Length: 410
Image (tube, rainbow, N blue to C red; front, side):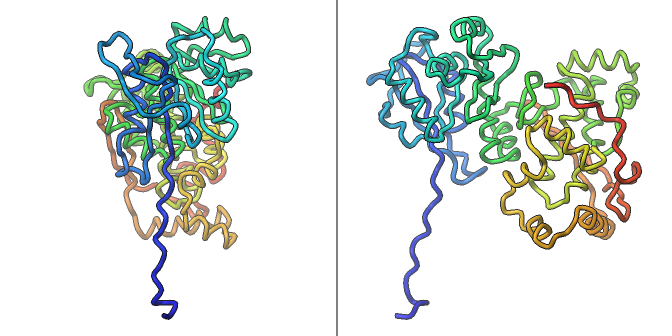
């Protein structure tokens, strides 16, 4: 038998990321349901393999549902946490009452071997009892924030955010629906923004609700009537992200004074016009980094930052990482970028190369904004003209855009 005739070994399927929801003797149906909706349903059409999900009970027997006349049964127990990659505590019914040391030891073991720990609502109390939140920012339902801070003074409780990514694979969210925001954030970390956005549309929720801290997940367009001047202006701004925009420009589009526009904008979105604009530009840059091989300089121009320096500054402020690191994370098989890097092509040469392609192709650029309830608004504009150095026609190459605000302090 020749080498070509030998049967080839079956290709091993990629290991699925195991997510477990740890529940006590009583569980809130909504919080547990959110975790199951995101990680338990088969979403392999978005990313394959999808997660493997299990509900782990701290005690054997049926699990009571809060204020319900039904129970949940599961075959999984504490001994089934050894291979878990992400452990979620949807709620913890006993709050600050001392938990079983065996449960706390299991949480510490999962974290010590590199697992990810997540709490929703009152689940933060269990992570705090295990000492995993000491010295870290964390959040919980606003009703329990004072109790969490008083009981665990080493925890930096922030009651004003939807969720906190504390680093070192520890995440906490506020109550109830904030668990959706955090779960989508985790999907985005694992599979990228496009998958998280697709899942959000499938769930008929925004990728990220307005308010709270800026995260990897999107800041959506607020749900305002189409005949509202603020709503029309948001649609218009999303279609012109590559242009220099000011509050005066948006106010003129809304046909109100800049002062009135700023006031009405904050009332509708919970943020300022320029902060919202920066986040929309970062979101557009993320999509370009994930789905194209464009050099960072061109991504900066397409997303309205003007220069790579401007993009890096605001991108790190909003997303917590650099554009290139984000691309490596969410576009690992980027053959074009790898080819440019190995050939030693500079950013300027790459910009000139792409400028030539742009002139030949004359392809339209599309800006898309995501609205709540799964609706999208799409506007098409002609491709931005570039000069020989890859700079946009809006100003000289290397000039910092004057229409962008300074990064807000953390």
